[in-house]
Image (cartoon, rainbow, N blue to C red; front, side, top):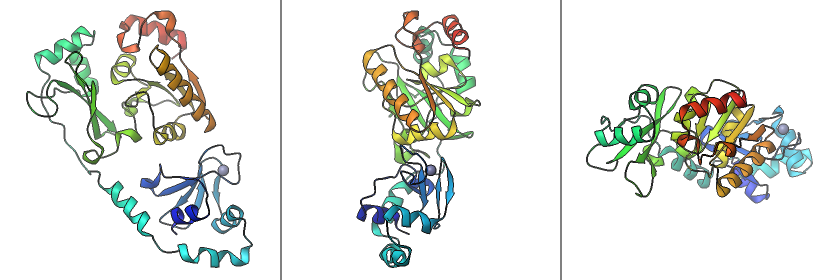
Length: 294
Ligand SMILES: [Zn+2]
């Protein structure tokens, strides 16, 4: 069924964050859903709420469209075939690659020095996060490549320039060259094995903090990213930079994920006197972790 066209015509607000996995989401008509937990499968005719479970499709549509059962089929008839809108959206999503490979350059001396200046041990980061150099020519020149893995598979990467004041500081592999759009996932998910997660601002914060921390790419997280966190973790701690705009973003994200029924918190490390976690010396981070009980 073409739910997108159906919901469009009946003016039911919907969310396409999960379209790639085959779902069109709306606000659930059964539970006290403040966001978009009720998913309609675009491939099979059934629906399921991520909070309150599976529901009978006919009953749900009757409730949703507020129509009597005996005219439901007549109403649904025009929406039974796949529309152009949906196939076009699917095609757009299909642009991603199945497999990608890193540029595969070793860290240069300058790149190593950059890490040492920031009090990171390059060998430790190579071993744990498989970071690489950006090479001497091309798109990734003078950039440290930080691979993004999901389930052990390389799905994208982000890079950090080592040149002072060079913009952009962080550059992602573009969506259509990635296996998964980086704006739908996080860095370091494979090292999160608890039911809680710490969401930091950038990859260097994560590499300083270690396991059970992740970062999106920038302070603005997408709805798809926040839904990912809400589906995977029970508690989310936002640990953004000690600075007004970042803190405002952290509060917004915490409120939104609370709306998804998740316990969300904001970690305030302003007492430590550092702008971000990446800047904090390792022994201070240990102290902070102890204080937070991680
Ligand atoms: Zn529900």
